[in-house]
Image 1 (cartoon, rainbow, N blue to C red):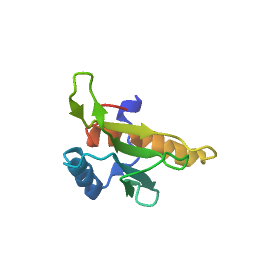
Image 2 (spheres, one colour):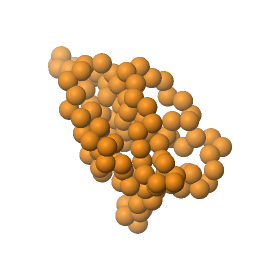
Image 3 (tube, rainbow, N blue to C red):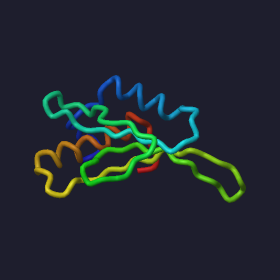
Length: 112
């Protein structure tokens, strides 16, 4: 049932940014941090970082990192990180939880 629940859609410019991020050529670790615009009921870009640390206020993060395989290959997988801030209002928690699946599908992420 929660698979079909969509509380907030994903902003079109964010969809394009996530697509470009997926196919970027840089080899450094990087992150796109997103938030919900409550008034527009949209997931929007919050920040972009080449170096970042996870803090409790950050809720939606797409992280690209360098991964060295045992056979010597190097890949840069995308990982989706979802956290619920401590002390967050129940209404806000529901908006984020209800928008997570839509964001994961839109960004075509496999590691959640």
